[in-house]
Length: 255
Image 1 (spheres, helix red, strand yellow):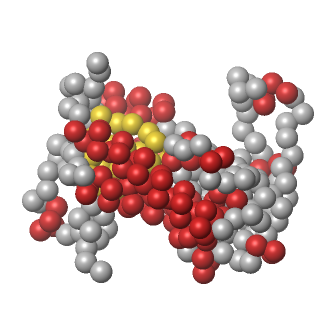
Image 2 (cartoon, helix red, strand yellow; image 1 turned 60 degrees about the vertical axis):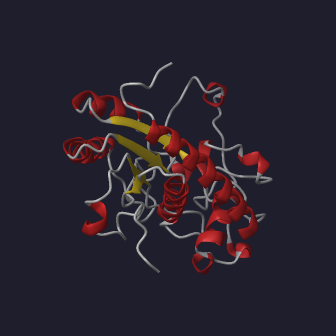
């Protein structure tokens, strides 16, 4: 396989120095248990595939985008008692985002997209703060799991290690997925206080009190064909966004 110029880990200085990159994509995941049947690196493996496929789509349309290496650690403050769920504090994420932003602004790469693949990550306030310090750099966040109506692709998508994520991993790395009859049912205990279900009241869930198998959503209806269909549609949607972003000047973003 030849090096893909839109994948930083694969490409080389000869290619990079000759390319005027318009957008850098930083996938940001997590390392955590995903029910009993999916690997701890599920979020990161999904992000690697989504970032590369989306950048490939955009590159073929003429956009000069580059997928940076995936950050493999996310905010898992609600899971301190789940063995080897690795937590990165939001303050650490802020520092890391700032370091990346500094490099991109100095090197005149005008746009940074944070591609989020973990529900515990919340980058909005970080984007505000980092953007304040590096005003020449346009920064935005994408949550890939909100980009499409998952009900069009899955009967029971689930929230964590359910049908959606299991289908994606059956397409991406089936050799790492245990037989689905060995998976937990992903049953979840809900808040007793109804306001937390209405969207205007929020508190962090204590994961081991919410689920017995670390999953939220039944994975047993998953299939690789569902995963591929969803990944193909997602790459097209995110890739189209990257094309639009690349072609829009930072000083001309509003109608």
